[in-house]
Length: 145
Image 1 (cartoon, rainbow, N blue to C red):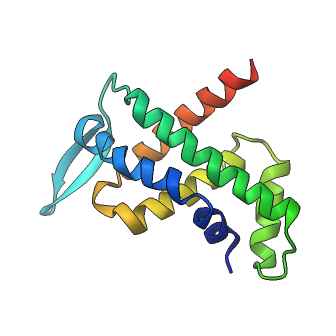
Image 2: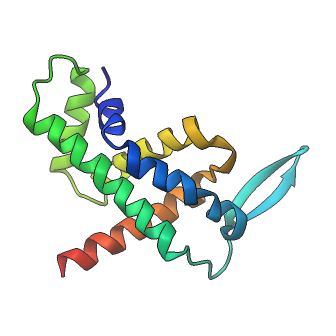
Image 3: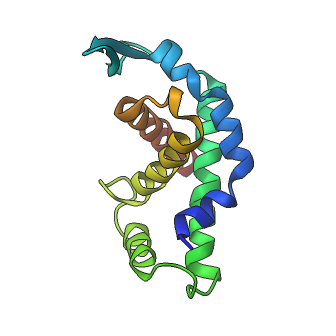
């Protein structure tokens, strides 16, 4: 079993709550252009601020996934998990929290993976990832004050 899927399975309710509000970014937050007959996300609209509901849902989903991964790393035997995946998560946990491929980056990647599988039509790609990262970093920094 994948450690990531284990964490997502333990985070169903916060994931569902996020999926409920996730389309907001696509509806109000991103610039889209036509490219070869399909739409391409260009970036976030100038000055766009996601709703409090969206921010709370993102952070709750992040906290659920993050704590589930930490639980898997600390409190379970790793016999059923891929050892390379376990090692990558351990390195991310020990490394810089906000570094590329650090802890927050890996958790958001996992969140986005779940979103693409379950809610692909409203997935906004890199601009949404960057927005999620910014909101999560702000929420973490607020809690550390």
